[in-house]
Length: 398
Image 1: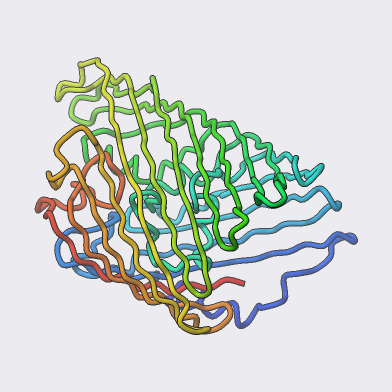
Image 2: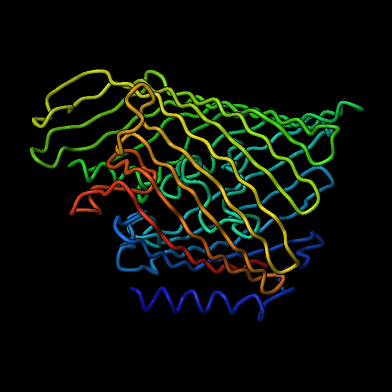
């Protein structure tokens, strides 16, 4: 598997040079654009294994690739779709996914509609996290954009209304209101985390409704916004120890998000804060799998980041990310926090090829069922409270 991953990464990295500029064409008079991207990563940590990879011995099991096609049918109507594949340790397992596929009709600048499998507007980067080439980081802040939950958060099957409203000297407001079904990623972190708790997940789904509002301020380079999402989650599975059913049904699961971005010259500053309140009914609570009860969580997460473009080919950055799985409990307990101080150097080798070298200094070790990198099933020796990790990632796009 390691050899195949290395070969795949090398082949994908060579493709843009061979195929560059061959994917804009016309079909029956309509313009068609095809773009693709891929990345290959390596991660090494001193103790704990991260993101289901065997990082304590060094792992190349960090590959993803995608391609999208779009066409401007009329001045107001656009259609497109994106296919995606990944293998990150035990996540993804090379299973192809339809990342998004939608039609977009813009009546006016202030009003448009989208329908299909549509990217979800949530926070600064949720709807652009698949575009590795736009980000400074090899790994985005896992407190808010966990790799292991990507498939469950990137899009929803339903519809949006959106628009941009000019406020003249006060700047402009961009809004999105959406609703639909959240996708079920059976190859993601939720499935893997429950397996570590002795539960085989058979199905996972639910509705998603939310909104995003961002203000582009009259001060050049300043943007601030807020998002809100209300989820309805239903999990069904089987407890492996005795074959009894395990179910989760949401009473409440909503998340407000606040974020801001400021750019001045070559410097960019970002920040985001989230709070998820969740109350669920569970069956199969105890070891016997017979308990029924209600449980709740109050999760808090966020990050602050800074990135500076030193030259055309070099960008330096750092972020501090924090995640608290249960805010009312003692924060100092390693199982109830995950702090990540990251430092990054991004090298833009060509206009379509980048290399990122990133160091992570992690404090905390939240484990099973929190889906932010650490899993007890992947760390049979037990989770240590401190982890240092090196991540190297090469990506291309065209």
